[in-house]
Image (cartoon, rainbow, N blue to C red; front, top):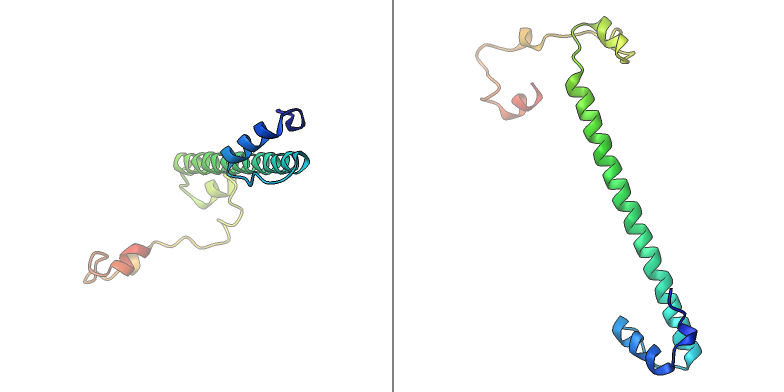
Length: 116
């Protein structure tokens, strides 16, 4: 890291201009201003890295979860209980096709179709 206190006032003002910071003040003020700016830049970079890491972790988690769900086939309540779904035996397994009217199809009613 660059030690701003070792630079001249002229160079400090040039750096402030490049960064869009005020160029007024004595050397100590310029050094403090640039140190503060560096600290903020570091915090922003760390936050971006954390967010990127979290996004990639979530994406990986969703992908692995989707892969597990796609590869898992449940043929009976006993199989689903063995695969980790502890509630599958307590809930009734319904066949929705028995309750559909032959007159109304899912394509006629998009709301119903979305739920079937």
